[in-house]
Length: 366
Ligand SMILES: Cc1cc2nc3c(=O)[nH]c(=O)nc-3n(C[C@H](O)[C@H](O)[C@H](O)COP(=O)(O)OP(=O)(O)OC[C@H]3O[C@@H](n4cnc5c(N)ncnc54)[C@H](O)[C@@H]3O)c2cc1C
Image 1 (cartoon, rainbow, N blue to C red):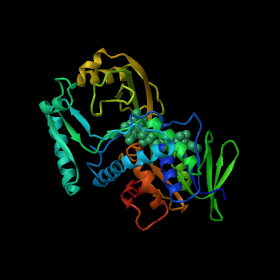
Image 2: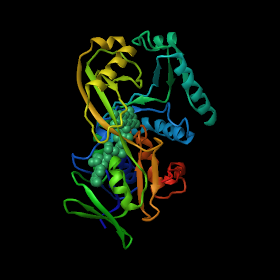
Image 3: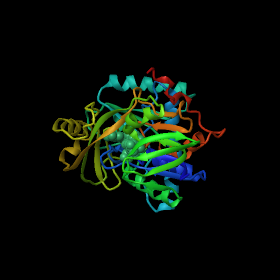
Image 4: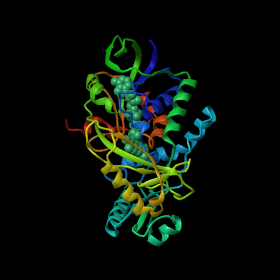
């Protein structure tokens, strides 16, 4: 046997889970695909975002909150062991609204969610005046915002690098550039076959392959449909401090550039950028933060979100191959701390493991 756990997929989900398992004393091999596979972890917006999640499933809101609460210690531990600062800032985040109706509609949803969560949902409604006191760069077209105090942001590429380094420091092996083509089970072990030859044997296997689950999942008896949703992102030149708290429209990154995000498009596996998409992003950003009209745009990119039909994460052990698990989610940066700190207990069947039952595949009718 090569390891207790083989994690297929070395994006932020696979690496966070690997890190947690290593901390539990498990031996772990991470097998990560080639440059040809889509990689949401390298193209995302870097928000640690609670608000708006779980308005139809409060357990998802609570799970996101639990992760957000763990993030600060998690970031410190990663920095202590790797020297990499993931640029975490968690002083709240803003959902900006351009109409009173949409602000009232979302405030009502948050109030209902707060009641469902027993009052634990720290948010405020900011009217235009209060908002501009908090965030002077906001323009006159924004009528107000929802400020959620658990929200924040980090540098997702530094997070990925720190996780990768720490997984190896803790004794994990990362097999990069290997596409897994087949997973079989026999004699109590999983055999993971890579397209270019090598076979890896492990007692348990975790599929954390993002959109790759559409291909590998059914082999292990999983039925979760994952679909791509493209997001285009823009980044400006470095600017003096302009945006204090991140919003769903823009955030100022630790190096000074303003990242503007993101389109939501169903265009299959096309992760390119379009003039129309970028123009729409720029227009919305300037409407929210008028000073951005003078900023130079440096770069743009597209990346594919990993979407389940209801947008909720999936944590599922296979019914036909016990010991095989599927983990996929739409917000892998937000949930990284929960994946690192809590999901190992669930994978190991510990009594104090988080209850993830509502995130199982039984909710899908297919
Ligand atoms: C535009 C955009 C903005 C986003 N913004 C945010 C945000 O602000 N906050 C947030 O929390 N989340 C955000 N996300 C979502 C976040 O990026 C994803 O939830 C997260 O990256 C998913 O990580 P993953 O490891 O599951 O998938 P991926 O990053 O796609 O990694 C999957 C890995 O599996 C490997 N793989 C696939 N198939 C195989 C195979 N057959 N064999 C071996 N390896 C394989 C791939 O090579 C890849 O490295 C955003 C996503 C996008 C696209």
